[in-house]
Image 1 (spheres, one colour):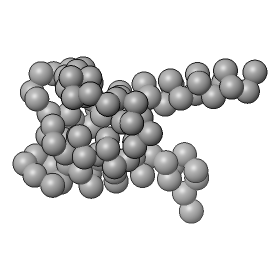
Image 2 (cartoon, one colour; image 1 turned 45 degrees about the vertical axis):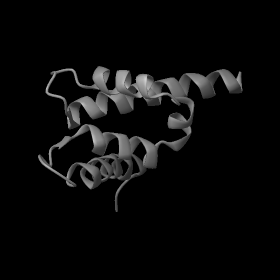
Image 3 (cartoon, helix red, strand yellow; image 1 turned 90 degrees about the vertical axis):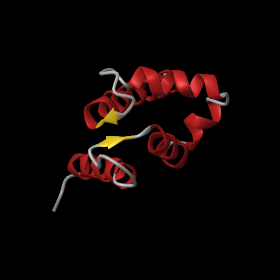
Image 4 (tube, one colour; image 1 turned 135 degrees about the vertical axis):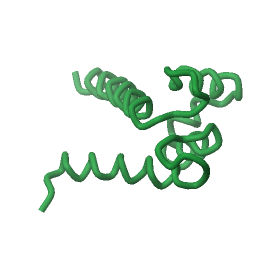
Length: 95
């Protein structure tokens, strides 16, 4: 049986693969795949990113190697950043 953390890690990998396998390189998210993932899997976050320029800027910032795609390492850096921001938000809420 998997622990909560192991389950969470497996879920993140599965979500990445669900979108990355749609077209092209299955180890990278194309811009459209990334956009779909963000809209489907992080709807509350995306509701606050309401203009296309901000979304384009977000996608460019994720693409640290400049190949116009988001690999798993870049995706994990983004997930970690968002999770830290959420933690800071909830930490402030409870104090």
